[in-house]
Image 1 (tube, helix red, strand yellow):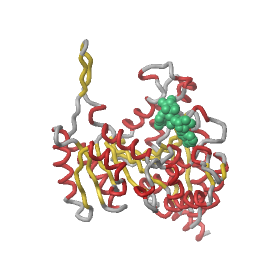
Image 2 (cartoon, rainbow, N blue to C red; image 1 turned 180 degrees about the horizontal axis):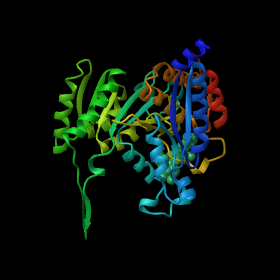
Image 3 (tube, helix red, strand yellow; image 1 turned 135 degrees about the vertical axis):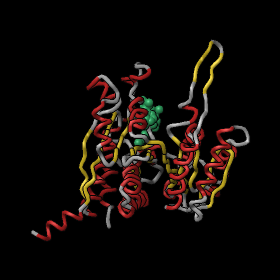
Length: 366
Ligand code: NAD
């Protein structure tokens, strides 16, 4: 009895809000949960899930894209795992009733100001990368984009007056400071290099951005950092992407550069993301959408969502070994030649969503 009590005390329990959403969301979330279950078994953790509605599923059930219950439950969880929202069924709805509003509501409701998007090219998928072999080399690519998510031009004052329209770009020192700290913290867990991207030759907000980044950098003497203009960064990403470790940037530049970085990795079905804030709850989701064209057909690639759970373990729960176990399992399944339809090449074996989940689960070990 005593032994049992001690064991239950050291076993960790994590409460995860799960939002499958629409389209392929339920297909890929199911596989990600199976992977988490296996991690729990192997490493002695328990994951407790509350399944919640958002997007089109919430519109159908409750008439709004983001029910208050969903926000409340997410706030009461240790972390949020989201599939994807949206689809043609709800495309006729406008403004605040669109399924995608759920994403904005969750980001602001949970105070998620930092978006982390790794662009990782596994060596096994080199053929899917549109860049030349000599640019990529033999060891793949691994870049982390850290994008400010709740400020900048997307949230500034805007308006249209007859034939004129305007948008406003504003950043406060505090907003820059908190995202810069995130980027340097992440760099400390990686190759210790930050490239801060701006347009300081033109924009006042960028000059403020640079000044604050330089102040934050003083607290991280082990991290080398540089500033780069956004036009140059867009070019360098395809010319010599290996120079980047962590890219730190504002909302609009990050929106564009993170898509460019993800494209050089070849497949949208492979890339996870994390949104973090000052609170304890982070949100983890694949970067792709709900892919209604392939929903429910057992062909969606679940790897982006499975890798999102690895990010959750690393960034929300500090479970480094468990996160590595998931990433290594994905790598070994790819090394054995298994591929979902979106990434299959000649001579490789095409498997469905469930089979890919099975294969990854089988590879998870201590
Ligand atoms: P999408 O990412 O859903 O699909 C683009 C293409 O990639 C499609 O051909 C799709 O079949 C394919 N694809 C996407 N994910 C895949 C996966 N895991 N495995 C294999 N193939 C995959 O983008 P879209 O078609 O522009 O948008 C569809 C819907 O998703 C829209 O309603 C859009 O608003 C919504 N959306 C949601 C999110 C989100 O929830 N975070 C993000 C983007 C788009």
